[in-house]
Length: 352
Ligand SMILES: *Cc1c(COP(=O)(O)O)cnc(C)c1O
Image 1 (cartoon, rainbow, N blue to C red):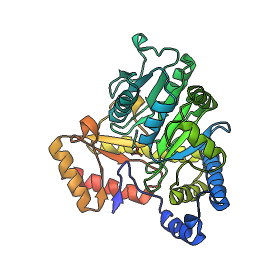
Image 2 (cartoon, rainbow, N blue to C red; image 1 turned 180 degrees about the vertical axis):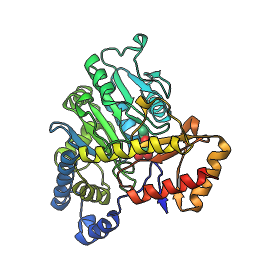
Image 3 (spheres, rainbow, N blue to C red; image 1 turned 180 degrees about the horizontal axis):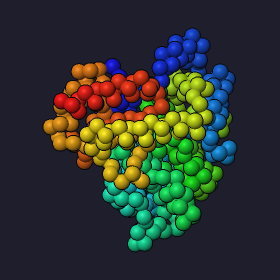
């Protein structure tokens, strides 16, 4: 079976071997306060920062999921309010969870095919945190680096970015935001079960000023532990081991980005050429890592079924386009051969 599901998604082929190595190394039986564990955590963070080109003064924490980051941000970084800028289901959910916790989440929503231009009526106030989704997995749109750079230049506010389905797949403009988070089961090509949170010195400063230490996953408590290469709770040791091995294996992010981009351009020309309709018509807002195809409810259901009979899993639609679209993950762990198999299927299906 070949999967193009945009999360959980295909893991790197080498993960099978790494699982065996993890077992043989003994580290997955080690206590998480042992030096063997701490050394591994230190190596993992170093390798991740090197390969993804994360600024030296940004800190990396492993948490349980991207969803957990919604909660950590709401509890530990939002003192006054938050402005949520989104065009799809994940950005909206983030706003909804935050609203439940803080009661002070404001929305600025825009359309799938629209380029983001902040409305003057919705300018953030001084201490408001800007919450934005880099790659909206539900509809296959993304923000450009220029867009994030502009936001950074315009406002002094702390900016938090959901990069769950783009982190480790494309280059990110790290300095243009203060909190970046993602999950391992997307572009990292790893089994589900961990989130990655990357924070700037300015975000750390804000967390210190707020001083919330009331939760087991309070950012400051997580940070105290990570500064010692430990974790506040018993961590996903196997997940960290696999992260380390995959970060050793992968090319530098600019090389990975070039591959993602070449494949993305290829998909966006191949699909319309073969009679498929792209959900995102405006080229300027298309995602590089999640490609959404739209059709009638009936045809989407038939194509997913036909693909499955050929051993190919297409991603279901998500949110409001759930039944009228399918999604193709363009994540680095997918091989050229697998992409060719899907293309062959799509060509043959289109002629039916
Ligand atoms: C997958 C996804 C999430 C949720 O990730 P979890 O690891 O399930 O918490 C959040 N935001 C975006 C944009 C996603 O693609």
